[in-house]
Image (cartoon, rainbow over all chains, first blue to last red; front, side, top):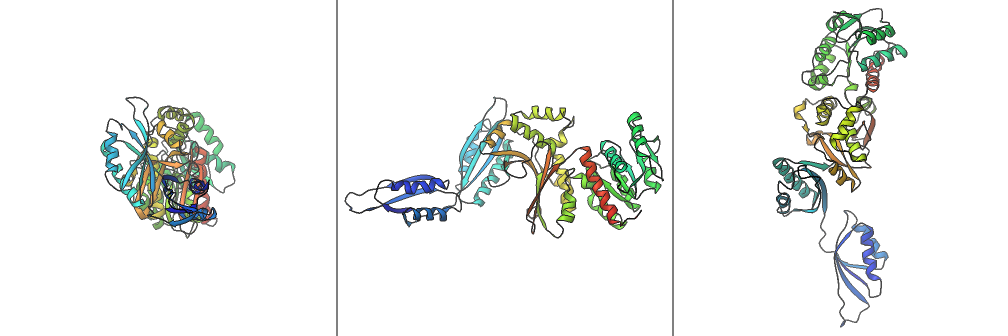
Amino acid sequence: MKLEMKDSPGQLVAVIQPISEIGGNILSVIHERDPAVKSDVLDVQILCEIPEGSLESLLASFRDRGVNVLRIGEERLLVRRSVILIGHLIHTDISDTIDKIDSTGFAEVHALSMIMPAITEPSSTKMTIKSDSLANINRALDILRKVAREKEFLIIEPLEDV
Amino acid sequence: MRIAMLGLGSVGKGIARAVMEQDLGFSLTAVADSKSGRIEPSGIDIAPMLDQKERTGMCGTAGVTAAEILASDVYDILIEVSPTNAETGEPALGYIREALSRGKSVVTSNKGPVALDFQSLHRLAKENGAYFRYEATVCGAIPIMHTIESGLAGNTITKLYGVFNGTCNYILTRMAEEGLTYQQALLEARELGYAEADPTYDVKGIDAAIKLVILANAVWGMEKTLDDVDITGIDGVTTAAIALAEEQDLTIRLIGEIIPAENILRVSPRIVSKSHPLVVEETLNAVAIDTEMAGEITLIGKGAGSLETASAVISDLLFIRDCHGGRS
């Protein structure tokens, strides 16, 4: 989104704080100052991820802090699902498992956390998949279920949307 | 009302004691265990009978059989609490059919026959003007069938899901609380008497699946069998997996679920938020019933145990007594 704020100290905080308060994640901030332009306002472009349904409250929070929203760019829904995989994940080529999701083009493995207790024992992994829609997350999970059957590992799925 | 009872294990004894100690309006006229039986149309004196069972392992005379009791016509309700056989349902299935065919109401805690042949038993009861009650087969003391039939009457049940097996719940709870391995937690469950010597039925999710079959057939009139349930047990769950879930304040529970609209009949370990009402401790069971009008109702209680099972059987007995309008 493109925002307009007063060119005075502490104004960037007025943009960053509301995003962090709603649990958002800032991906990039473009904050250019053109010395040739004599203006008391400056533009900031910000790219961020925010929880579903929180855009309206974020915009209200900007207004309260005197930040004008000039333009909201492409709004993309972001859905995450975490599953736990148990089995011989390394020996069955975990990078291939990840690639099966990443190569879809509609979902990707966003985070991976693994515990490997001993070489002969099964590993446990928490895998977070993200996508731009619930339908695509479900398509990605279908692929993962198929891989789990082929590679004989257990997949523990969330009961709710966690 | 006169009752006959087949099976005098811990559940049967609990029922006999309740009939003796509480003024429920029942007279026990016949009883059989695996080795003996007795038929006394004027009513059995329960205390000496239980005493004899304790001393000799037999409740009556050797040679008096379940078949004789069923044919005796000294009872209005048959309580069938003999050990279960999930593959054939026998001999309990035969006993229940026989009693229903004779127009006798039946109350059972026996999962095998109910899971295997629910629709035909239900039909047989209807044809013969008898009641067929089985509250004790699903979630022990939790009055799930009564809640659905009476308390939520008029509601469409859209989904049923929950923790249906106390042994698995105990194992997962202990793994999460103490960081025990699956094997250690299983051993502990066995030592405490929560798990059988052969825990396959519990830990592989079969026991929970049998309960789902009963609920699917009873609540929605489906004709499901165990083969229709997608089953994954907890024997592959690692302590590390639970630890990974805990990082986000989540945990793992064995969840059974029925969602008729999506054709889902499944038992599997699932990641659940620790604050979810289904995350119950130790051997408790919990069932969430999703309804159109009443929203979601969650029932939590003891899913097993002889006294808890006896409680469910007695509530069925009283239901039949009350529905009969005091028939003696």
